[in-house]
Image 1 (cartoon, rainbow, N blue to C red):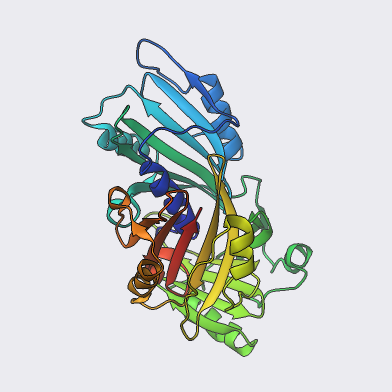
Image 2: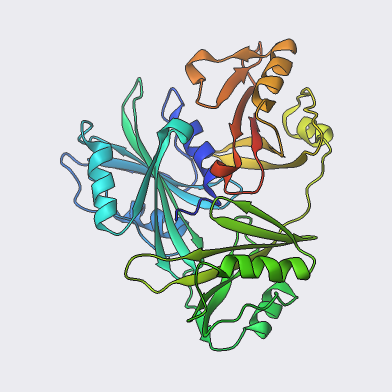
Length: 375
């Protein structure tokens, strides 16, 4: 089962970058390596950038003649971004997909919804290598773009035959509802905002397809609100969130995953003051019953965006806000149109808005989301 908890924001980042009409490179941690023939391994400086963005882990090589790389902080974590130039354009995506598959990665074609290909590989029981990539046609010079990071932590996990109450308490300052198993493999887990969560993989004879429903009942008795998204279930009690699912791969032992983390309860208030302070803009307020709103500044390639996540937005939210923006005089950028969304500019051309609607199946959350990226 592909896990995409961090996909939405990273995909928006990659998709937005791919739509630039000219190449951009970060002035921080950026460089160019040049050579007259194909490289046969990542240049040393590129390798260093990749390892910094991936907690010491590297990724399979993509053959090109020269590269630009930078570290980018998107607000959901730090990513190594590599621009590759001078390569076999005809088979670039197919070649790299094959390379990744040969190295144990699972591939998804998400070009329709996100404008990129998505690959992931579990590199330990508590960490996953995530790679997004695509071939980009550019008026100046076509390039192949790769954005990569590691979710979780590459530190060694712990094992126990008893429920790890003390370890859970040390990270979360509370215990979690018990799940009976023969063996527990557990570790702290670095969440997207840099805070710690806690992950437990449970193994044993009683771990099977019924484990998920059993844990739902346990959490419900403890006062958690239960919901489902695809194959994954969620339990929420105040700010404590628990994500859990059953996993079984061919020729591998089945296990039950429990991942707990804190997430502040978002407000339904539109962030007018914060938006104005960050961008100087006053935008129409999106209103709908039952929504919650999160927001924060996100920096990409030395450009700061004010991002708004409207959770619980319905399937008409994109068009509703589209009409609101048009009424306020915003113009559609035809060359920047995207699937499931729009790109706008103001009359001066100084400000832009990207709006995208994500069904919950895409966000790996429990609600649909209308996402706004403003600068």
